[in-house]
Length: 489
Ligand SMILES: Cc1cc2nc3c(=O)[nH]c(=O)nc-3n(C[C@H](O)[C@H](O)[C@H](O)COP(=O)(O)OP(=O)(O)OC[C@H]3O[C@@H](n4cnc5c(N)ncnc54)[C@H](O)[C@@H]3O)c2cc1C
Image (tube, rainbow, N blue to C red):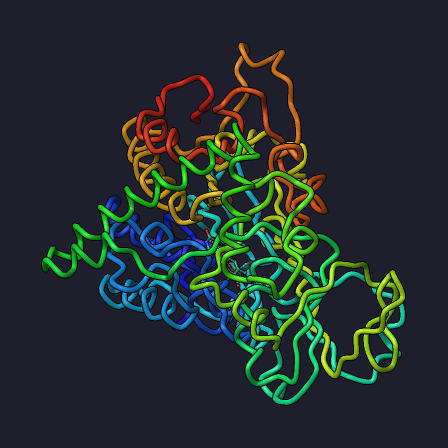
């Protein structure tokens, strides 16, 4: 199907945020034309891109799923299960006709005279370029570059006789059966991958510079099982489980921030119970930072710890000195023999989908803008971005923004406005402005590496992404759209 010449709302990205945005428009803003564009061949974003063995969520799907579509499975889901869920949302809401795949947005030019965006795109298959105009841009392009992951430039990589792979670009033909695998990194990706390949591989070594905090628990929930046993409607189970998970997350977050030592002790106790004597927990599983400064990876059913306890996987805490022909030499001089090295070293932050934005002919530098609640940007008209929660499920925010945009569009109609943009108010003149996210508060590597490219945040709540769902779920619906922070033309 060809790309139309104009839509009221253009959604960039058909991952979980973009599909959610489409649902909200369809149900809360009927009559408005909209289109989703995605560079990939199919929907799903993150869940399509990541194809390494065992790819799964580390949030429960009651909160990572949408509020409007019950999740009927166990809390932690595999990528195929998440894709099937998203596919159902598309089918049940007749969204397929609104999506064009294989189309990369390359530029977006705002014209104040026309009060619309002109968006340039390229068809990945034919190379053809085109344009579409849109009254409003709903950016659901995520936060990292899908084409490739982040791999540090390790010395001697060219000398290694085996294969180096990044989980984000996992080769379909990679045969790891009977092979010695070194996985560099210990984030959620490594923790997912290791138990998935440990049985087939000769041995898997997780080489980490420093340890990561892990949660571990059975991948099931007694309350959900009880409710289902009582034949309670799935929509109710979903809502009850959402509330339960949200409360648990909020309580643990508060504990981690207010009593980090208690939180640490709880996490370590669970790890010790799983890993037993198989490894030195103080050395390999006790991070230097407090819990929740980075996302805590969830290990369902302790599967990674079981792989370690069985001896099929082991952990080395050390630096990479260099790659050699037969493996990886650590900083302390040990050679970790390897046939395959997996660099589970993270994402490459990509700000606004590598799209060249301009406003009335002037290039837009996002780092010069201040965010309004982590979704709009000073001086940038008719645009929102879904940047989800990092400590809670991303999708919780996709739904909050999903309720906000139709309300904003209806308010513009009621005012007869063609554009809306946030601007700092006179009362905000002396407000301290800082980075998008406070590196002292939350500091994953991919964000720190790209902090200078991201919009800025202010000291007041409305000028930052607070990462606080429990407050924002009440604050967002109460946003006064006539506040002077919103400038309408
Ligand atoms: C393996 C893995 C597991 C994760 N697990 C969780 C979890 O359990 N809980 C959680 O909260 N978060 C998790 N995350 C974070 C996760 O990325 C988000 O939660 C969520 O999936 C992001 O969805 P999204 O739709 O906003 O963006 P994405 O999934 O990144 O999708 C963006 C889409 O936009 C497209 N796109 C980008 N730029 C352009 C462009 N210029 N033109 C056209 N299309 C473009 C991309 O091709 C992509 O399809 C995980 C991430 C990974 C990698």
